[in-house]
Length: 121
Image (tube, rainbow, N blue to C red; front, side, top):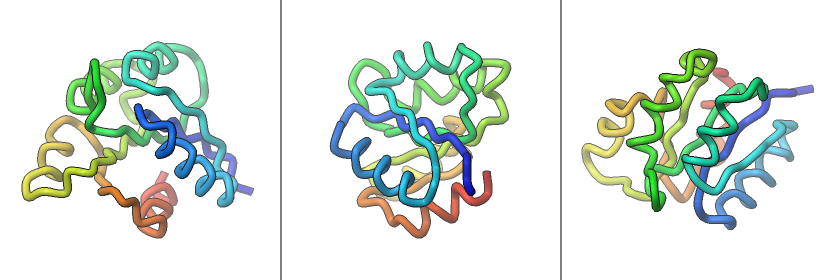
């Protein structure tokens, strides 16, 4: 039984719903936050989180700003962060990795690729 907990950070409830349904069907437990600011508050607690999926394009604070802040939280610096972006342009993967993401997945999400990423956690 897989008991890994994934934090999904996305301002679009439909994306959260789809990701949560997919991951729950594979026995992952999911929690979500609608923005990076709310996610940072959660990440400063003792909540167990094994991996983070973060949408790179969000209002207020985008993933490029949020990832370095997450990595600066002592207990989260080794938590894998996977950037999720609809911007599948040349250079986007590099930008995500430069921001500190451990890997990158583009929308629409390839479920097999997502599950393969999470298997490494």
